[in-house]
Image (cartoon, rainbow, N blue to C red):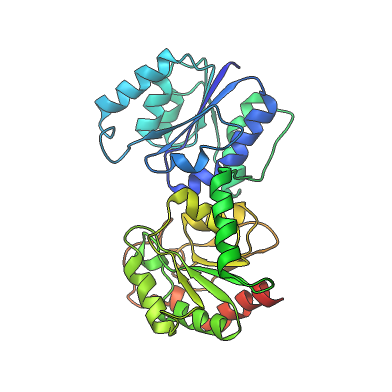
Length: 344
């Protein structure tokens, strides 16, 4: 294999979960060029990955969303002469782009049904049997590779890591714990109530922890609500970084935490991939779907309800109007897990 392309233009967390597939390809084809295609805005996170020869962004919601634009991308890829093309995305557009690459070996999932028209090899995704990392690793089965690696091992630029280490040294006394709190989510039903987050922040501050508050674009209002309700706004206990960090800098700051409290989100995957202790709250989504934080220091908190899950991502409003999947997970329950990670 001289040039390999891997296509996964799904969400941020999905791209992080693709890293074991990329590591596996690099381990088995050390001399090949390995290129990773992700959705627009995500590429910078992977710029320092040693496995990759290049990271490319695809604007699936904007200028490249049309069939004609996708065809142009496909024709460009054909000129790059890929030996192997692997697509982890299941849309018709992704299948067409795979075919347009003219790669001799093209691997995708066997569903939807039309994928057999576009790929030279298809594999079952086995959604109800495997976790997402293992589902992605299914895509190399036709290659009969001897070495399979199953941990993401996210690598960040050294300046970002140094900046995050300096941040911790400047704001946290030696021996004191640092809790990261990220109350936002693109999907409203994935958000644990702001007043619940606030109660955990209040308890952490009272116990002597420092708390850093994170929020992505558009999440600043809920972050401020958490800060105000907790009574820590403007105090030394709380460091508000909501909306202040790039994706790469956020990733580096997540690596220096003693615990990261989060909804089911893309940054949650960035945190556990770096072996940061994670307390994740799952409401409309469920652990058994396979998109969850892994490792001995990661905890998924969820409650048993007949209405769960109500979707793969979670809707914007609770279909039954009660949002019990989140409201029944109490601050007492969450603090019990977070306090152990912070204080032992």
